[in-house]
Amino acid sequence: MRVALFLTCVNDTLYPQTGRAVVSLLTRLGVEVDFPPGQSCCGQAHYNTGYRHEAEPLARRFAEVFRGYEAIVTPSASCGAMVRELYPRLGDRARVEGRGGSLAATLAPVVPRTYELTEFLVDVLGVTDVGAWYPHTVTYHPTCHGLRSLRLGDRPRRLLEAVKGLELVELPGAEECCGFGGTFALKNAEVSAAMGADKVRNAESTGAQVLCAADNSCLMHIGGTMSRLRTGLRPVHIAEILASTEEEPAV
Image 1: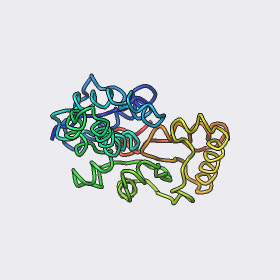
Image 2: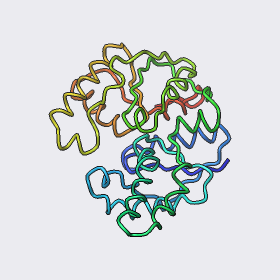
Image 3: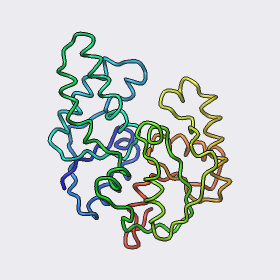
Image 4: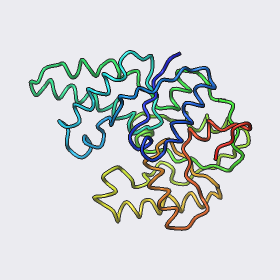
């Protein structure tokens, strides 16, 4: 199977190791992975801040860059949700405003073929044991877009539970937002910081060494809070855990 990796802006700029982990993991599972160099921002930041029209050219570019692939895989539930949930709205709104149906027609082919990493592994490849080894105690935070928009459910947990050496412990208040929310963290800094502190304190109470999630944007916020609170926890993307083996342990 030939798929395209949609890395996202945050990962490309700040967390390239997550992209490398996705490629390593999928290649190990027999998947041929391409990285289309023309990819750019999906437009989520623009759309969520109210610049809907400015998001449209980015959505069109996404559709053109990733056209023709069997599947588009991303290690970001928030950007995956932008494509799956909000691209159809962009197209419909353009049609309602009398700007024709070309945007909707352009976006339609890529919407159902875009998958967040864990749902691609479980739903498309049909695997939960990916041959990973990660000898640490881990607690899992389900991010808002994965939980509420993509409805990932227990897919990430099933993958983590199959990792050899990994002890998965329950996170109190797991379904509560970490406080990031993109520009919410900028516009409501005090509330965002308080929510982040609650999340980190709950994670500390588990005794885990690692807090895992499927979105590096949320992990960036949580990790910053961990640093300020001087905890012993580490934020790690689920792709890096699943890519780790005894031969190639995660850093």
